[in-house]
Image (cartoon, rainbow over all chains, first blue to last red; front, side, top):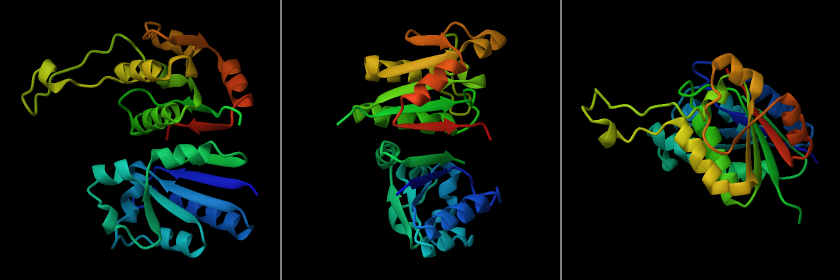
Length: 109
Length: 133
């Protein structure tokens, strides 16, 4: 099985093309692929509990694993216990481990 | 188990976006895991290791150059090369270097071409391309 790793750096409130990642990730998951979206930089801004953008909820409902970079969260004042349901705090060490797995396609956005 | 080998292409110039910082963090994490890392710097990214960069004072905080200890990207690249030793290869695109007059790179940076990136990607466990926005 191929794994897909989307590294999302963009703030969905600023850049509507994050929809592209959400739709592609969900479609790949529907086809029985392992899919992870790793939020980093301003990509973590929608991960705060209470943020109104619905795309992360849709990803979680689709079964896509959603991780948020701890360094980026800390820089933006988002505590690990302030994350919305379906988003898990992570770090670049985990990202590197995923990149090093065979049959993993990585897309930076 | 065969050695893990990551290839990373960078394009952002220094101080342009958070992409550079994230890339440095990924490279450092991979080296600490014992992975081999190949970096191909293209376009403005060839200025990341430029030795001529100078740290500056912070007029907002009123701190001096010494107090501010401002980290330049060339210092980050030097630190990564020291961390990785022969497990980190950093190649700057030669044409991009010439266009920008950016040949004075820190020690350990090599000059190359997109053909080097092709070879790096061929031999890599994975390749991550970090484009400009």
